[in-house]
Image (cartoon, rainbow, N blue to C red; front, side, top):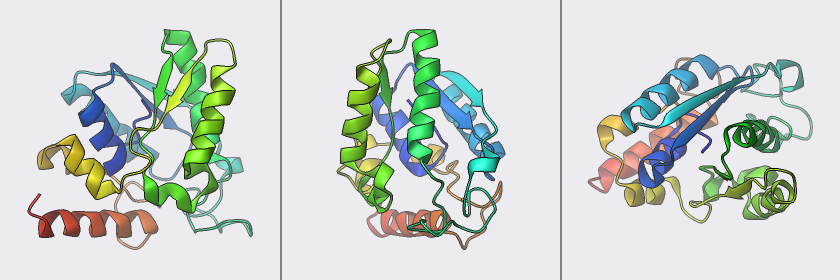
Length: 194
């Protein structure tokens, strides 16, 4: 599975317990913390942890790249073709290590981006499944909210607390869309006596 170290991927990892986690450092501003969190989650859940490093900083846009968003950006953290890029890199590694199913933690709210929607993942699954290696793409939580995923997964608070959601750097800025989502989800979980 793709393990970014955010709330969604941590909850999915805890719920589905895949054998292998893949974390990608593509030169996003939060990469160092995402890698540290993902490594800790993988260690705690006894998952093999694969790290891919590819500097795509010259292709980035917006908060995750530390630059102004492109005119086509639907939101400030948009990075062009990001999920397609991540699936491609993870798929390349998956074929090399004999993995045939690639799981990602996208949830319903990721539909803000075209590459966070169910139709995108269906197309990615078809495309990757027709190639050598026959890697399939599955998205178990695509119809859930983050709160629903967390509750379904049963992930303990002490593991979920490691999550890093900030788009702008290694420390939470408190002001980006990732931080806002983190605060809203945490507040709702506490209100619901999670």
